Amino acid sequence: MKLLSVAVPCYNSEPYMQKCIDSLLTGGEDVEIIIVDDGSKKDRTPQIADEYAAKYPGIVRVVHKENGGHGSAVNAGIAAATGLYFKVVDSDDWVKEDAYLKVLDTLRELAGGDRVLDMLICNYVYEKEGERRKKVIHYRHTLPADEMFTWDDCHHFHKGHYILMHSVIFRTKLLRTCGLKLPEHTFYVDNIYVFEPLPYVKNMYYMDVNLYRYYIGRDDQSVNEDVMISRIDQQLKVNKIMIDYLVDKKQEILKNKRRYQYMRNYLEIITTVSSVLLIRSGTEENLEKKRELWDYLKEKDRRLFAWMRSGLMGGTMNLPGRGGRQISVRAYKICQKIFKFN
Image (cartoon, rainbow, N blue to C red):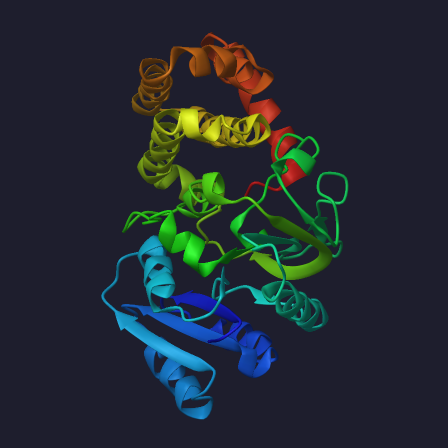
């Protein structure tokens, strides 16, 4: 069995996928790299993937599939994984070698311990095009470092500071046990990926190392604001799936109040992003979609709706009239600058 499986979803990724894969190859034989070719037809992505598999047969595997979107590619990676642990690295991102080797050393040590590790967390770095200073997202004041811990040991997460796909390595069996199945042909499913497994996570470990390099800069990138507005129905789909999950599993999640608070606060951020994108679009159709989203939340859980509506984020997103919408956008721009949402 491999120590770590890394899925690399690829869709017409020829210009940048080699940098990603080369960074992962430094992990050696303990790692399997699963290149998931998600129906690429416009460039040499399938051929490049096969060339890597032929050159590194003990490390690289390729899954060729019909196009199903990022979530479908992640699903295929999980299904194919043979490693004890599992990580997703997008094809335009990469990992830093020194941090990567430290992570693998730690996983080896923890794999033979008395307590089962469910989720390992590391820092990630925004590699934003044109910016000399790179923003590092770390968890030094939130999570205990270099030790196994549980939800009860976590400190308060600040607004906009959450555990994202870039941060995490899950135990592979946990992802299968929780029945994670990301929607196909849908962007922004990475939010579901770091949400639905959490009720199954008991033991965590945080390493204060800058492992993941998250590239931002392509005009067609899914986190570009104009692109997000054009795909707002997919954002809303993810938002509602998260609402359903938190409400339907509320009693189970509430067995640990700190975990519930974390998941509730994360949902608040996602709902804020959905709301402000609908506001920024400026169309009556999308303003109606914002009302529908909040009505959906109210119908699912009135208490959750009231809590979110009365909070700073929810209250700001629901101020009446054009003036209220302008305040909402200004608040979002502040968050965007601090947290680099897109």
